[in-house]
Image (tube, rainbow, N blue to C red; front, side):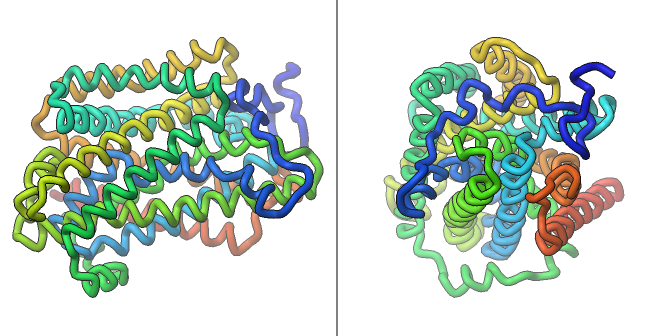
Length: 446
């Protein structure tokens, strides 16, 4: 047995490797004294990076198609996805703070190597599917705002790796500030668009009520699963369990317990904020396209061109394009970081930070760019929706290990998840796996 195979503590097969995102690990200072508010403020940030997954361009495609085709009905899926995300992201914080591992490292340290390699492959597929959505969305945003050809826009999105390198040199807080600023812009854009669209608020409220129609209607189920895949994204689980550890929260039990509490507050508040934007995309589509009988709208570019005549303002499509571009920029930044955490965590590689990010980006963006260039401007909406359904199929391979680790007393010790939380997470996993099985059954039988 080599040194790397010697268990660090009971329950883990191998020792912890290098910390996640080692160049920013524990770099955000947490105040030793002061008010609870001041100490909690130090933990604000990671949850908002995770919340970006709620509003990435792939989510736009599924929400626009869902709102246009079925009105406000799928708002209940957005709400359900939000609850699922809150539960799962709280487990990510628990795993990171309790074990000192991100989800990728935990899989590597807990499972036999062949199993870990298979999980790594699935995680990479999820990153690629995420990047397809983000590359397409960002390229469309550049095209709508500045007239840049889609193919050139795809290549421009690859430059985000240099943006991350520059921001991270300034400090991890600068990355968080960049993300939160763009989230604010997105929120304001949708606030104005919703006001212009003037939706039926009674129908909006009723749209959050559960309905069995989603299960019985294959087309609705397909979009519902796409919304879940676009919201509870596999890469977010890896991302959150890594970036929580940028906080210098100490090593004592009380310090870790306080860190877990503040990290959970951060992710819950951020995801509730994200629900507003996530639901706004669907409400906008329902109030404009579905209400006017345009139920086949699925392309982002088509939605952009139709907004002005339906809303009666040239401002709406401009705000739509600005919000889309901000979403694309945010999503590429967080997906690149998630790809780095996945590659480092599963493979335990050690190399220069810039080289790690470059390799991570190339692994993800080359197939994404190839698919995008092949499809061109036609069919991008269906490609975006398909990418989100692929993500939904990858979710169980991230969720099940997360639930297993956090319920294991030997691995988590004092931070083992309470029974009620494990039960909720188990139900979440069961719902997603069941929806996947139902969709697969419908697809096979046509």
